[in-house]
Length: 125
Image 1: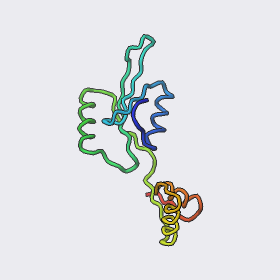
Image 2: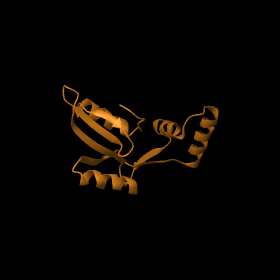
Image 3: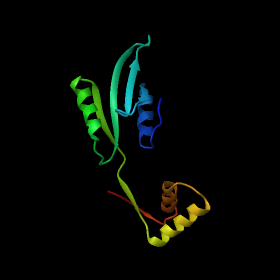
Image 4: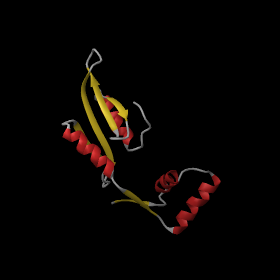
């Protein structure tokens, strides 16, 4: 597999790899998928754009989609996950900021800790 993957792209790439695809993270679209025969010749190609739930294609991504489909190539958009918000009170936010000052970590990690510790509530949109 080539290219750096996001958390939402990793499971999709792993699934395709387990199905026998070579997975290339190309960026436009997100994945170029290749299958080869025993001699190493390419026998199947597919393109996949990965979007979080509710996200739309950017204008340049729509051009890629239209171009690939006009060539009758295997292209699709895969929607992954659900859009999620995390809600918590101001005092909890202050606690998270304090934790971050003591132990520099990402805001995402702090939010996950708050969810784990019952300090916040997850709400899917």
